[in-house]
Image 1 (cartoon, one colour):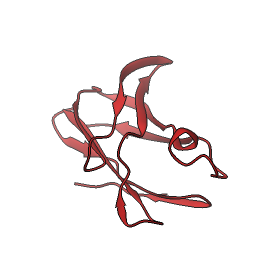
Image 2 (tube, one colour):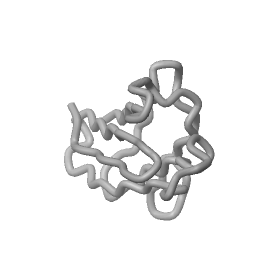
Image 3 (cartoon, one colour):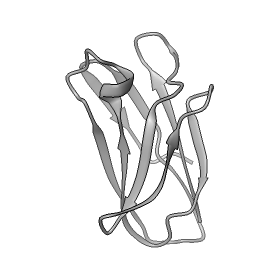
Length: 99
């Protein structure tokens, strides 16, 4: 099972490069890093269960209403890839189950 994310800045229309992200499970940090030049992180392996991916949006957009975006998701099939994208702006965000 692998996990990836892709963060886009809806204001500029560009990838959110350098945004800090961490993956948690059961109160433990499983992985952490920063998005690359294309706004992506990939290759993390969370395993089965409920996980949280935490985006440090305040560190990336200092004027944001949402200093942190937390997305909880459940891995029921550890063999499948899980992609959780984030579309970000100072006063809104959206996400979905990607492929």
